[in-house]
Length: 147
Image (cartoon, rainbow, N blue to C red):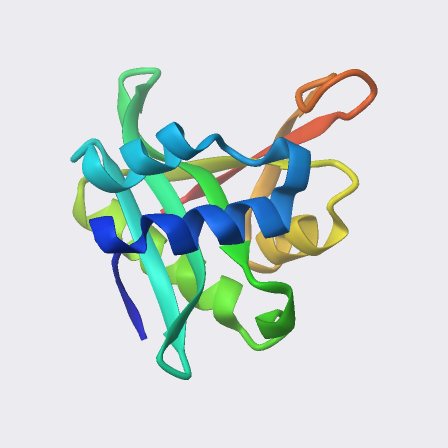
């Protein structure tokens, strides 16, 4: 099941963010903003009556067009390879489309093979390599998809 995140989910979402991204995790106050600020859309995936993943995005203006920007997508390690990430991404794309977005973009660490493969599977294309985006020597890839 996918639903909108609620304030009461904050600690769980932050714990998942830290578990998935360690030193690259968003700080708690960003996570709070992702849930409470209406500019953001945060969806959670629930399996076995618990939150096992989430995705956060917003609508932005890029070259005069409304586009979605995914900031974070996380699935607890023990729930990966079950389609949770795909389901979250598809649900977010639909939310962004309904909000008027004509495209969606996101970034991933170049060495995050699982994330890169997920985005390619969902028809995202590489639009740029982001040198040192995640710190010295840790390049990112910016992906884009027309919705």
